[in-house]
Image (cartoon, rainbow over all chains, first blue to last red; front, side, top):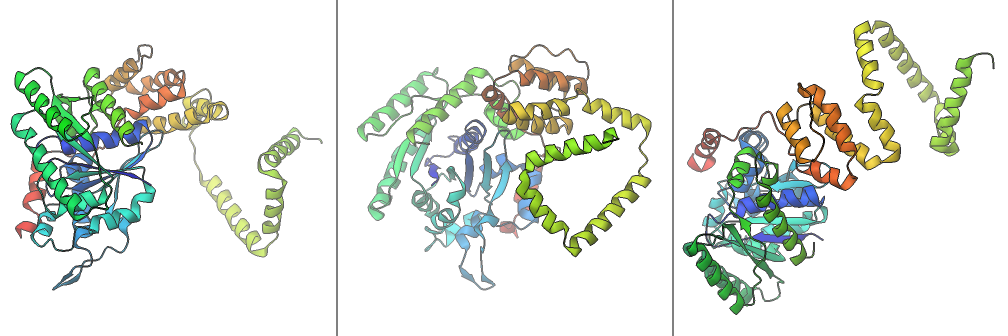
Length: 279
Length: 178
């Protein structure tokens, strides 16, 4: 059975999509794992990163391929009939098959996913139902979450075994953490039987230089210690190669001129995550 | 046996027998004896013969393909298949991608990749000439290291567009705005 990890933080801009995509590529390329990325954000950044303009336009929009929107809207009656997703496989795009095995697949997102939030009743179990049908084909499923609390958050919790929380060591960014704690507590109260574990908090975009950053890290560690949350030893350091990778459609380690120290930092974190979730 | 070619055919048949086993031969014999198979084989053979008569292979093309097979990368990979099958499969896929310029599309990128992998400096002045020494260099690496090195590569798509303009068109043309 696949390990299912949601990358979540109630603060935007902490690098969830970049981290999701880079982890997917890393596990597929170096561990030869079959990885599925689920883009659960109406801003569809992970889809943009993984597919680029032409593939997205041709393979998703022009081909009228089902997306995460169709998963949430399936079997819902509208004046024009019911939205159906007869074969779950239809909503999956093969992104890459690195040398030596492994694969990266994607359930793409689209802007219209935001419309699902307007009428959110009874939709929280649609994603977990979909994942139950396809997870046998994968070793790892990474869910890239939207940064606001909604039915999508509950859907992500219900579909996951683990949560991975990227935190940018900055004052406003770290406030996303208590918001997330609140969201998790509410979820656990509503679904006491669902087994959901916090894999840990990872400092993303860290440089370990600016005093503000040090202070933010210290505060996050304090909050984490009080709640027995794991904070990853490895930190994902700031590197210009991340935005460059997104522009070029490459993982950080394949970008030109990426510094080996930054790449090693990222791979060390991936290794620690692998241990935490027993991959 | 009077002719050398007859002996060679017998030797190749023995080799095929060893490779596929007598059971496969028996099954094939049963299938061949069916009238449908004879008809299909007949039309196939005449098509092949016709294609052979029409084929106009120039001398230079023949020379070129012979040069490719003798001592070239494909023949080395075939040899490697028996001793190190995983390496052979990885390198064959890499060779195809290199030939199609789907990875490392410039000489500079090939040279940088080789340098990062700790291979001897590639002195080639053209991309095509750098491919063979690169593959031979990679062949010397342990299979795990080779796999990890190749994993660093991300195929380039000639159609890849990542412009802001492209995304703007998609976002502003979305159903939500209609």
